[in-house]
Length: 121
Image (tube, rainbow, N blue to C red; front, side, top):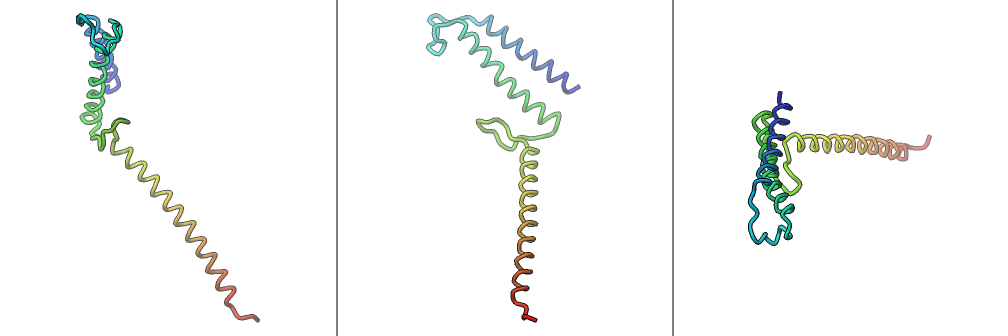
């Protein structure tokens, strides 16, 4: 159900962006950022509608449907709690492996030291 809802809303977003871009009246003269092209102007209008709508759709689905709140918003995108937890769990597992290795090395060194200190027979 969730996938179909996301697919329908995403398709509607792209269609709405295309329709608005097609129906947008181009100003005379075109703005400098449009590079004197009606196509670039229309593409920019479509992206101005589609981009924020997709961002808000992603935020709404993750927050309302899945109950996950983003922990950070940056240039790279949104960071969710599970991503931080999984990376934290991986780091903890690596540290535990390191502790086991260090403990084994210390036991081996202690055995060598004790063997060197034992009196000759």
